[in-house]
Length: 439
Image (cartoon, rainbow, N blue to C red; front, side, top):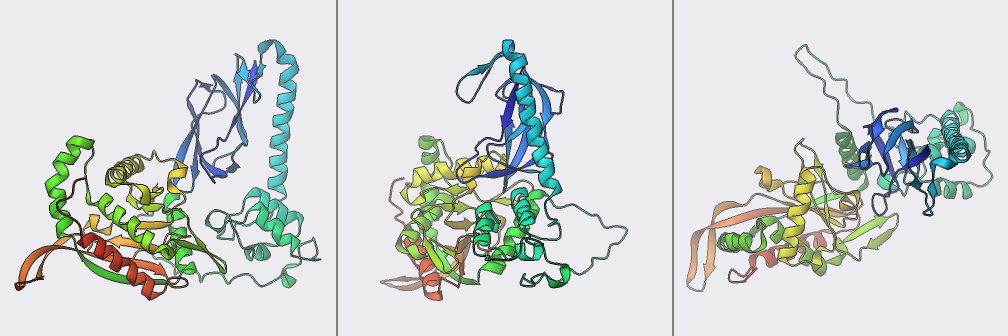
């Protein structure tokens, strides 16, 4: 017998950790190659961790809801065949007596360290922020109270305090004592807590529904965005009659040639990417007192899920795609988003987001900025309207297809001129659509 360490695999660029959501297999169960052992979550995407070996699950090292770093051993599988090691060597049955004690000792040590860490970390249950076990352990060792921990700026995902953040804070902390101060003398510079929510009265006909994990994440993300950015909106109405007529003319031929349905979304996304190239200072992020001008145009595309939640897959380097390439990317991401098959990498790295509120019949909306971006565009429903049409022969009334676009932007770094010029450029691009062009 040999023991195989199942590790949390790398799940994409910049993904450093994941939360265990459920164990599919239990201790003692037989596992085949490619069987899903555990389900994990990173931000909004759920992933499955399969086994690369065949054997029996003998140990689970992390419980449900534990946060695990990429590369950490999460379970031990006992196998009867040779298992390749990290350097290509194998652990064979004939070496059972030599290998097993060492492996068992290593696993026991890992479990013991985890138990000790859990027992010696501070209690942050009253905080709305997430702190990893490592950060809490360092805070406990260095005498950092929960109130003081709350004041540390986090550079991790969703503002989380990372190991480097707390170590950097300690370097600048000077000769502060390494033991926690009594409650009466603790530092009071932490931000004031939010007012307590108004109690909700219940009647016998009411039903209490627990928020889903994704729902909680979205709720926190939206509140954080409102508290971070100074939201301002600009609106403009765009005549998309030429686009509607052109799509109606070519959509059947397009589907026959490309095997893809041509919707309005890729047309609008391509126009947004072109607009960003003309106004690159909308494609930025804010880091303290610094502005980060993004080198790539990565468009987030808000997509509705069957359960009512939203997810934002990202079209990387959108400005480099032609209409066919954009269509294929959008259809693929939207299909896999609805099937919960997106990879963690595919919802990260966005620099600007577009949401289509018109898909639900809304004529416009005021979306919340997707941090750390500084702007988001909402596409309203396309509706027929009577409009004044100017011609060399004079003005007349005609039926036109119109769409209202709303632009939410961060007024800390995007002024009204840029916010307004951006959607004016988008309007010019869409209204000059050539109805005679090919696809």
